[in-house]
Length: 100
Image (cartoon, rainbow, N blue to C red; front, side, top):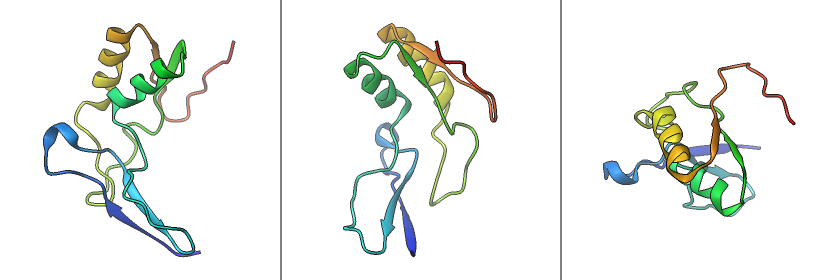
């Protein structure tokens, strides 16, 4: 299967997306970014009534223009979680998280 990726970054700093838009052969193309901003991830946790949100794939990839890290993604994730009363986990690369 062949795939291509296009940048999902907007020119507006307030609407930059940390991710990519995948175009996969045999699938209908979409303009929907493949990931959430840190704030959107916490809002998703709130909507889903999750008690804990876990940041994944942060600080691992930075390959513009196909994938570009958002500025201070971890700090923003933690700040948004604090504002919304969600417990936030930010494991390092390879770190395991125990389930309770």
